Image 1 (cartoon, rainbow, N blue to C red):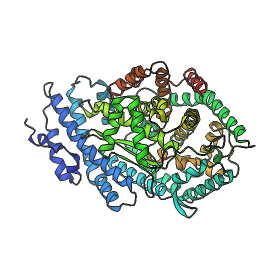
Image 2: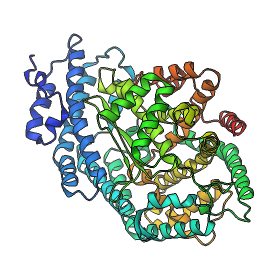
Image 3: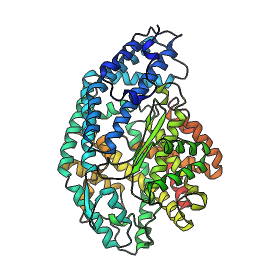
Image 4: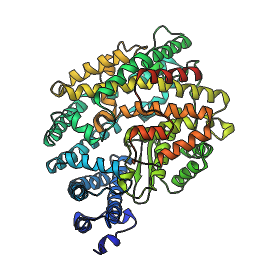
Length: 565
């Protein structure tokens, strides 16, 4: 067949931003008409990838546009229009294309694992779920609007909650406590709205799982996330190992902080201030400085990685500064057709911004490296390894944060920044266990979880088990509603354990770098270039790490970090 339409597809997704389904459908019909055989299967996959990449890029550009300004009615309307009119039809045709390939019995070279993912996706697809998946996306937009509009009046200025968090680093404890109270009061004002949204999300997810033939949402979501290499029981094993290794280490950090601050009880507003009561680290003032110094650092890690980042600066593929009505959080997405990543975050001038940009730059590097694979199915990477790319970058870049290497800090501040980063790794794993444990409880007990009071109680129980070392007395309502402020619980259910598993991989890459920095970076880049063509254990292995969640592995990581601290 000639595939004349497919040959004339636009090269630039921007040309398709306003296309209707009527304009897109003929391309899918032509692709669906392929008479598949061993001689043309590679052409089929190339044409499918070309069309998929264009549509995927249109979606991602619309997604970014509504996040850049959650109050931009045109951007939100355009995104919703795509979800309503194009997304369901694309999913229907993608299902036909997957079925065509599976029915052919063909296994293209280098396509074994992608084919398994396609089979799994095809098996859980249900047409009746398409409007429900659209509704889920819309509820996610509602969450972002609620969180993105939270501002407080502070010293005559209107500040977002992320902007106010800078005040948590003030050496004046009364000042910090006041900032914490202001933020908490504003967040609690949305308690009912978020509880109502939660009930709608939970009900929707149960229906999606039921339609797909699953008795519970977790079983469905496990397949949707294509988790082939570990189980929910492995996650609980991981939580137990964290409790035995990382939680005691976190308590040691908090106790040392309490002593250094010279206070009787550590409170939530005492966790970000320098323990020696030094002024907050101020790595940059303008976002341009954050960009330029990050470019220096990444070039030191690898000239190739530095070149990738410079490309992003030149092509305006970064939106870094926090502002009112900008969606919360940070992420890196990929514009697949032009093979370019895009970084979105909320920088306010603190050290965490530096780490966030390095983190997302790791994802961007992964995107550049995997873009060389010909088929989009080969570029789909398990989140567990995708986060090794990002967390590994944080650690590989760490030697170059000092100014003499082109980075942000004088020697003393560099030591403070490095110590904080390493401590944060230890402090994160217990929190990760709370978030993941909470989600397991929710979807194991969906009837109970419909009552937000039960969710508060579950969160508090897990918090009191894993988050030891500081005191929430007087602020119990803030603590028990902590699940409201973890966007993954609302937007990306079960996407969080990946951070914990990946942190172990990243720390092993870092350990290798301590012996041979250049060799560790080469192994890291070689693993990223494999995309999703290997299993998680194989990808970890190529990067020089072991995919594991046992107590002994975790203890070795804790020992390494504590020795470095």
